[in-house]
Amino acid sequence: EQKKDIEVAVVLLKSPSYRLDAGASVFIDGVCSELGRAQLTQSSSRALLLFEACSAKRITLLQQLSLERDAIDSGQSVFIGAKRTALGRSVSHKSAQLWSMKTGTTASAAMSPKFTYLQSNTFVLEHAGRRLFVDPWLVDDLVFGTPLFYKGVKPLLREKTCLEDFGRVDAVLLTQHLADHAHEPTLKQLPKSIPIFAEPKAAEFCADLGFENITKLDFDKEEVVTIFATEDNAAALTVRVFPGALVGPPWSRKQLACLFTFTGVANDGATSLTMYYEPHSDQPESTLEAVGKVDVALLPVKRVSIPALGNYPLVKGGRETLAACEALRPKVLLPLMNAESESGGFLGALVKDSGSIEEFREQLRSGSAGSETRLSDPVELGVPVDLVQLYRA
Image 1 (cartoon, one colour):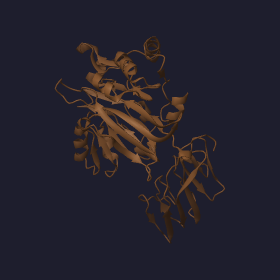
Image 2 (cartoon, one colour):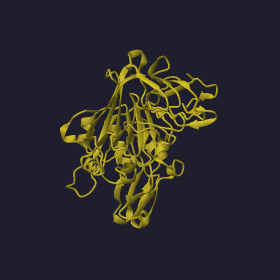
Image 3 (cartoon, rainbow, N blue to C red):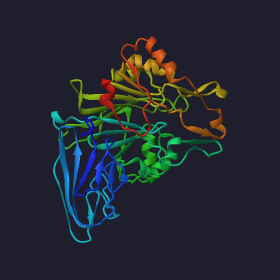
Image 4 (cartoon, rainbow, N blue to C red):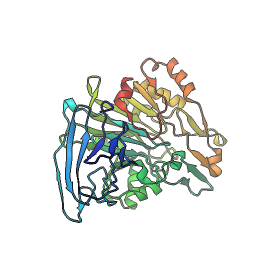
């Protein structure tokens, strides 16, 4: 309770040497683990309680374990005695008991969605106790063709060197089929049982990689797809997709623009919050008209192009993002800093970005959307941001 409306998994142990910090990292015997992960240095019999804090006012018991030298994975990857098991299963040296209580939310325990930015087009949305990774590039370099043609390097991956450093992955959403969105080295390392929500060609690519639970996101269907929901449907994360960027020749099928809706939140009297995302800010006017007003928009503000090819745009940003703000009227614009990766190779040497946060801020203020839309400062990499608090600021 060091922070209001915190939504984390909290592990409580009968041990004098544990503590939790404000960021919800777990410290056991002086060792820092990831969110919800506890690794014991002793294997003696202990009682363990796992809670989920839905808000500062209510804590719901998820599971209680009575164990002796056991390794139990209860959704937040709990390590006991240096062992780990699959979700909800136990490997016993002696005996273990595992039971669950149904959980949900009420109006007095509304959830607050979180956004974590991981450079390029990659980010995490957390809601209803689950984590959705969008366009994940989490390991290795980004290569188009061969490294001699194009090689992208994500600076963040110098600090986070393996997939486990990013925490639990409950589902993945892919907005495009190209490698900077459907990153093959990352996808190959993910468990093939993870739900995948993807643009049709990206969905076929994931099927070829062996994924078992794939939902094609087709904007022609005009349907709302549920990503996560609590058991009582009091809180959910849904997505509806629209025509987005044109990648390839004019007759190519457009990629995805996404309208995420978080329900079961407390947002200035409302019970939902909406967020629009198009990684290239290349959306037709018909998409903007169909989406309508949103609470938050996640769009690039810098333009990325190839001057040697007549300033061929790779990421539009700038003027197109300003037009999107005038149509969508978001209260908050989160700048997508997808021009920050380092690039090499023949094509990489030709790619240039233009514009800046400061220039765009001035353009926004002088435009018709300036009185309604606030440009947020770039968020700190890898740090969850409370979207409701961001909206209210």
